[in-house]
Image (cartoon, rainbow over all chains, first blue to last red):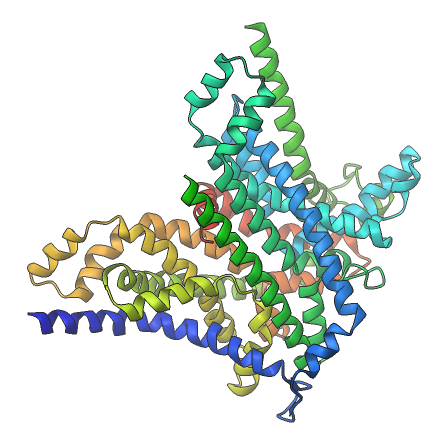
Length: 293
Length: 276
């Protein structure tokens, strides 16, 4: 009986688990380890003439001002996007869990930006910045709007933050709606009866109660922003003058435009370390909160 | 009473303003897709004088829309079928087998979900395109797409499986049912709700993917819709009206899919967010 059961366990493992594990190993684990090796070689991508150069790639990228600038502006972009998308997401979450008629219809409509892929979204907004907003600026005589935001480095960064937040906030809204829906109504009612103002109820009751949604949304926004790629490529193409080239887009360009694969892979490993650290922080915050509760 | 009605009106106005903010870019593109390029550049907010449906037929031909649509469909459907099958099978093993090996690999799989795609993008190209010679083929795109979604699938289905009582398994096994039969005939049908949630979510991601497909596909016959949009918008950079038409056409399939499965998609967003 025991041996038959044991045989069954291995049958389940081999037949059911190993296929998925094989796919995982060959698409993620092996390429990842291979990637660490690639970051130690000099390789132009064509043929097999690579040369082991140790930490040279890492030394090169960290002494390259452009790489550090790209990391820095990715951090700025991330801060902007995380803040804007979460503020909008919470506002929408509150609005769409309030006593509003047709809430579900509004939720459905507002989520639509997430159905569109990054490539199409970037182009759509490019036309709006280049022609829509400039048309408004010219007809109303507003100087700041009459030239395209995308042709000025600072404004192009703001444009990128706006577009990303436009999409991301609608995504976060769904998570916040779920969070606010789970806040017990009696709790809010009790605070109201005690004479708390709407603002005080929000700050002292509702927001603390959705802390897990808040953690999820903050980290989701941080990780997504740090890995931004498609919108970066189609909306600004890294321009003007490379001033909006974020780290993921830079890795892509270093590898597939400049064909410096070893160098690009070293940058990718740095991006990995950053994202991994963020995830460790998230795990820490999540477990800490669970202990408290 | 009066105050309540007033508050309701304010909420409605706020919701309408928000909806306009989230939808106006799409509406604007749709309106301009039936105008001439001249009308668009002179005033993007004007309504079309004559509906220029020709933009659509022009974009349809220039984009090789049907070819791209077919490629996108083949990739998305294949990934979805494979993910739901292999993911559910592995999730079943994780949920039912108490073995150190399975538990360890499962936790490593969860941890690997946070790795950015860029970390293994270059080696993937090196391995699949150069060493295995699968350049310009849908196969590596499907296979890697499967790999990128398999861990999430196992995670999601496992959670659902844990809520299915093990007594069902035991009863079937005592009746002489083999574990394979048990899974495919009894467990798999019970997974339908979570599979639907998973698949609409995966389908959206795969359908809209640009980066992975662009690494392996390079001829016009192989391009997916997002790749086609990229090529089309870069090539016809001054002919805006057909471009808008192309953008609308590329969005429509996914929009229709969303409107049909919105409940599951929004459910998938909530479930997917807790994966961390």
